[in-house]
Image (cartoon, one colour):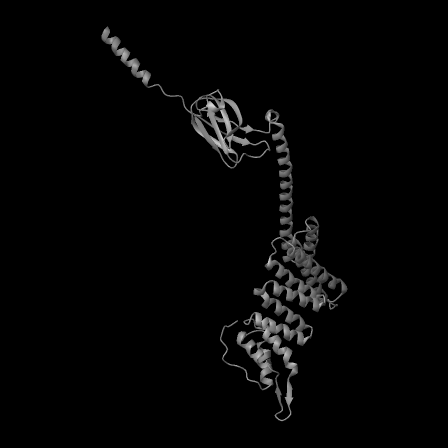
Length: 382
């Protein structure tokens, strides 16, 4: 009997050591600060100490991420005080009971009335001030998002031949945010496209492209570009690139409205603002004077374009064309004498653009004048 009792006792002891531990719990949740936004950083800690805060030890510590979320696993079931801490201070807490195998959701919402009442008057005043400021920022961000959306649509309309729709939308944007230079420059671009479309339609209908209504469209475009220029120039950090581009486009609008002197000034300002792009500005200046038949002014602008960018072919053509009327006929040889620089300008144009759109004209001209045409141009040179 004693042997049997001992065996039974041994069996019972072995059975008691094999008992399974209760499964651990997991806990997760979201932490909302008093302003109603996610807590960006902090910790959620668990303790069974109910004594003074300075004497507590925490058994579990879970990090709050940038979205205000936290998650913890392998938590021993039991009753806990869960504490939210940020910058080393307790900012919220609650009592919870975690059961074996439970996946508990425990959120902390500091916008609740109970929490708000517990705040000091100073903290409540700071919170209200923060809410006001945050509301203003949120409203501004929404306004900017709407402006960007409208701006993108306006540019798409302009690209798809709906320049008038773009002008309307951008005009409204400049009223919403009148101190933004990019909006005025975009409006000027849309107005210029609208004016070009109207001028093309007039030519197709065999009516005057200089109709006052069309000229006004170009003038409106120039005015919008000037507004962009003024705002950019007075900004804390002016953009030379944007400023030069606005001057360049303003020059185009002014030229098409018939204001050649003002257009030339705009091109000069563009060149001075961004010397690296001066060749383009002076080339445009030379072109508007050449197209208007003002050859002396065209030649002078072409010289500046050549100096700024010697590898641009068109200014050489304009320079040659501005000088060719000054050729004289030698009564003894009955041959034309070209003015200084004219032949060289034509030759350089052919050197840079041997297959350019003006190349056949230049070659025929030189042949008719009995002047040499180079045959050593570099193939493929642009």
